[in-house]
Amino acid sequence: MVRFLISRLSSLGDTVCSLPAAVALKSGFPGCHITWVVDPRFAGIVECCQAVDEVLAVKPSFKSIPVYDEPFEAALDLQGLLKSALCIARAKAKSKVGYHWQREGSWLFSGKIIPDPSSLHVVDQYVDVARAVGGVMDRAKFALAPKDEDLASVRSKLTERGIHDRFWVVNAGAGWASKRWAPVSFSAVIDGIVNEGLPVVLIGGKAGSDHSVAEAVIAGCKSKPANLLGETSVRELVALIGLCSGHLGGDTGSTHLAAAMDRPAVGLYSITRPERSCPYGQIGRCHYRPEGLGAIRPDEVLNTIREVLS
Image (cartoon, rainbow, N blue to C red; front, side):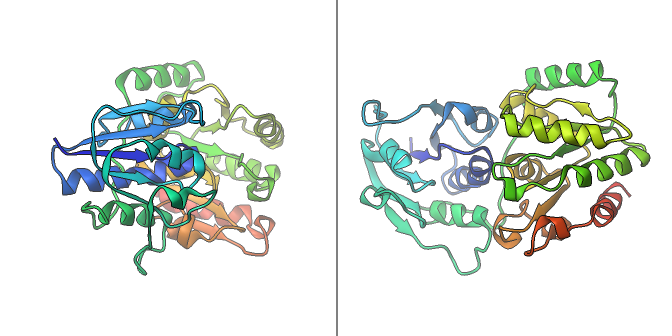
């Protein structure tokens, strides 16, 4: 059996964006076996990818470098950091290749794959690494499917909050403060969505910054959203977004997840270029202001959402 090893440890959004590389390998080598090494915090994403056969949840260090029993056709470092490079260091593989942005000495363990000039989006650049070892793909596919038990859990949580049908998801948080739209702007859009007859579910991480932003958003809403902040596992987040009618957020993990699940994703961008990091295939739904997120008006965003709903 042909075997491949993929090392992409974090973060949520970057892990999602890397999944098409596994799908490309499956297309190029039908019946192959793909092992993916991932940070335990984000293992749920890879577990929901139908192209991945084995998920190794590890936190690599010099004392705990993974050891593999079987040889690989190729090992792919899709992160380009020392920690991801260590995960392929001991692998026996005919070739070891990596994402072109190599840091922390990761170039010592894999050959850099320069993206095709047409690969502007980071997703396509990850796929280029898989193509270099025989992967096949024209337009990226993510092969994400929620687990039945997670769908049941999410539906139960929605029912407890009075949501039985269609709903819209909003993530007001982001890893960097400069990637967060003003809470008052999110509040205005949430009220507009509710006025369109659709309930809103607020999501986010467990970090204190996410909770403080969410509290400010909820306080500014006339129609309060259902709050699921920090109440879903990563796999339940896959299920939740798979059920939603659309997603609004900045350059953050759940935005990429919505695009990967083929859900309408309205993105808010300023310090990152949408051509590279927008929800894949949905740049037309992105609002980009290089001068800052504050220049994006709530009525503009709401009009985009109305277009989706219509």
